[in-house]
Image (cartoon, rainbow, N blue to C red; front, side, top):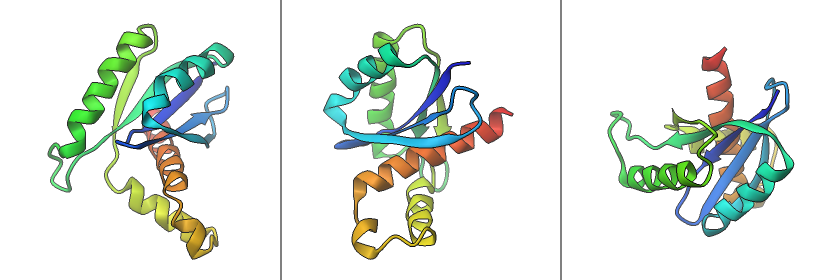
Length: 137
């Protein structure tokens, strides 16, 4: 089986997470500068088989579009253009940053480490992927 890759897209940084080949476990992959996302994915896809891309869909607490929604839509368009054979699924990402921060606290990370926004983005991507896997099953 191929992996599933999740994206927590941001204006400056983008968090990435992937499943194992059996699609059982979601793990953080890395955080990349957003302008380096497509070149990074091209390299990654050349080395690893990915069957689906999951991207966080930013919504307000009421389920409405946010300022980031247009950025994510543009990212989806660029992903489809560059990787036309890989399906892209959008997953509600409400509360993922808050959940990522709480995960960092629960795992005992020191306050200084919790201020690492790149780590928050990577954990958020992992949470997005876990949500997708739970609802896919």
